[in-house]
Image (tube, rainbow over all chains, first blue to last red; front, side, top):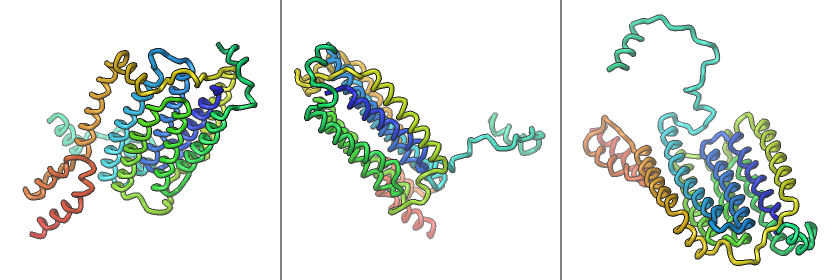
Length: 124
Length: 218
């Protein structure tokens, strides 16, 4: 088999995964697209291992490790998505802007009673 | 080896049966992947992902990596997609078309994806213009060969991987635990029971909710 077939398929699958990660709004759909990218990488690893007839079978061992790490990652990723859904009511990543910088730069606040209470809480 | 392989094969434009099968299954896999990232129905996206992952398992079989094909079906189709479906259920994904499945910058995303596809495909086709894979030798991916190499050369990463899986399991359980501090002891008991894993929270959520409302009514 010509090596171009599996590696071109892997490259196209990877690009489809890139589109999914950037274009989807639901966090679980983003996780699905990440799985597509990981599968493209696995196909590449297997194709190169069979091409080079590696005595260490490094490509296939790394593929097994990638599959296992992807399973662990999706378990943790879904737990995080569930937490976000519980606390914010939606799993849309477009709405998770709490850590974003404000559009207008804020003026430095004057130290007031509210800030002193926060500082006391932080040091306690 | 490349020149002798090139002399042995008839050429790029007269493919063997394996190559034809590979291209056909590859087209099905790619089509399923494209539908996964473009459909507006969330559950259908997960099911088309099953088709894409199954198509990749067939590709692994065509590349004589039979152990990895079976592991792919077991772990990816059998547990990753099931986890995704549970996640969709627990975040109350809408059945049918969801109006906000795609964000506003999907045309920029399409441009980036097309550019990356063009770059990658051009680079790999240019690099592997005269490289053939020998598939008729000893099976590279039989269970015996994979097991021998894993337990001779890859023992330490294998054991580290099991520690990683344990850490991920514990982390997922701890993250998805409910900690309600203002509950009466009865609902606290049901909450610790439901803290076993994320799957059981789906089952005991209605029970805990009804127990909580009963406690508040009293």
